[in-house]
Image (cartoon, rainbow, N blue to C red; front, side, top):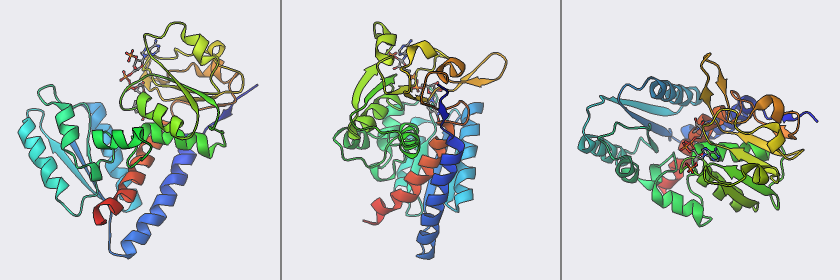
Length: 283
Ligand code: NDP
């Protein structure tokens, strides 16, 4: 068997095109959805992510504000900036690029963003809403992974979905989204004994560990849908996922490549959350 490749670039373009139409309609009614992206410090990777998000907003015709603060910005200054954006009617989504410098409490920062403008879906209110089946904003990467499955025609209901990784930004919300779509969900962590026993039983396998190529073909059930969330930079500069693509694609039914799988969906879902989020502020 050779897996069907889930083309994240193409699906992300479709999502963007759908939201461009909706954003255009809103603009014709005098509403331009706006996103504020705050970055604190000089981390080069974060700067690239932020630049890509701002560029993507411009492509969709959304208003965006890029707020770059120096690494020695105090927590109080950052919280004051967030309060200002919470009250700004031009801004419908606020995102603070993580990580923030160590002297700033990231939980405090995420909690300060209005739940109505929390396009990353990290505020405890929105986490709770997702957990209780009342999704408002879902975190972009797992939400994008769910859309990849749906748009590829993978059926979720009644299937055994195994999520490897339990981070707040990927693993846990991914598991909740799959549960919401009636999968039977298992979450594995670094403490799981005999990981392969679980992964081999997965109809849908989502891997988000940050461990390059740790899931190999022999750990995958024939015909399974494999979503590789990992992005790892190898010593030769190339990118790879948390799944060993070469061996996995011989066994899986569907698989996402890295790059070009989940990655492009993250920004597409951010745009969706921003353009869709304006409803929450207009009542
Ligand atoms: P974290 O480091 O926060 O979490 C990793 C999780 O993997 C932890 O729950 C950890 O378990 C688990 N884990 C680690 N090793 C193993 C193992 N050997 N067996 C089973 N579980 C294991 O990472 P993130 O969730 O933030 O990111 C995961 C990956 O996704 C990274 O490669 C990251 O770069 C990528 N990523 C990609 C994005 C995209 O846009 N495509 C966006 C966000 C992340 P434990 O809790 O027990 O320590």
